[in-house]
Length: 446
Image 1 (tube, helix red, strand yellow):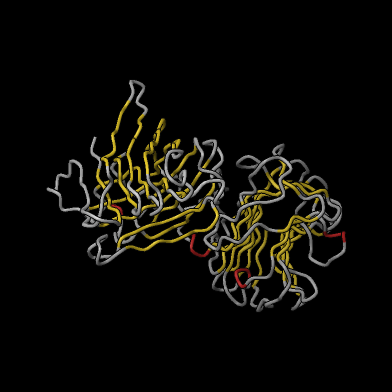
Image 2: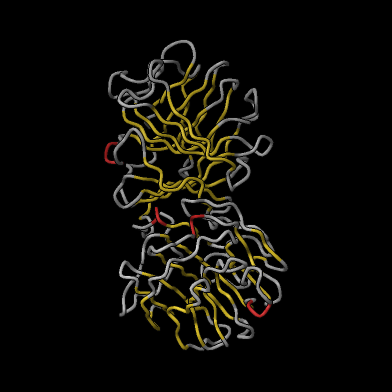
């Protein structure tokens, strides 16, 4: 099996093991010992190596030939106990490499120091060497929390091969986005990547032996990608443990977890997609984000959508909105039989539609406004109504509330479950009188 070092800072030259290029690799440093790769009869692989003090290193153990529109997943267990810092700042990840050019994605640290998503990449056109150095991106606290293992890493390549998304999981079922739609540098796309696979990066205070066990690997087609992902400003899968009061924004905006108010919580007893949904009891329960320009639409296009399951049709339940003291907009069910987008600043109700939902049924509800100022309301992909809506939506300072009207009476509280909420600012996704196919899976994260 080919093992290529990506380089390390410290005294000496890099060591390139079995390099078909004749040693034209990185020029500053190397491991004390080359890694030893062993494979069992079951196909499990262990990589063993040793680092010397005062340096750090990287290498790739090839796993596959990387291609656009694919996703690559492996399960790993790191053994860092014999390192000087017990791996507190070591990174396990996935590497892309050609000659001296490389880009590494992974998780760095452990439970005692805090686990962070991380990137390390060379500087074009010469990649990593003593003259050009490298760049690092600390993506902040990783969702997985600990690297003790076994953990899963997944790299999802976009359909055009120009960006990748790093995901992590502790169980292989629930996935967290650690880095979203990252352009790979210094490559223009994955067609320029010669070697792809396991990558490690050590802190300059690490020293000693280590090993990494890999017992699962999968190369599969990536799920559908979203051509408008850059315009997505909120994307909530609302997945988590039963009773949890925190959730993750999977959009590129990566807003922090909202505030869970009242008895609002995640419920594994109901979910349209994934492991859970947001449960609200219709009495002071909702989640809330601080004001942001990400959901200021002005005169522009937008799409607001999600999955909703009504437990009761009482009140005038608000699905989502930013309507409070300085009223602007909200989507709500009026009188139990009319779905409505309301702009209270202009005292105008736009895109209203007579519709009486059934309780205990999941519905995909969406509102969009296109470049011609036509606003449409859809239920399960069917356009229910349209109206010309040329008003400028007010740039309020009110929070964004899901499941209630901010500052409003309890008559706007939602009773039921909410899943897969998405706000796209600047794009009318559907803009069609004939409607669209109802999503059959969670919204794309790539």
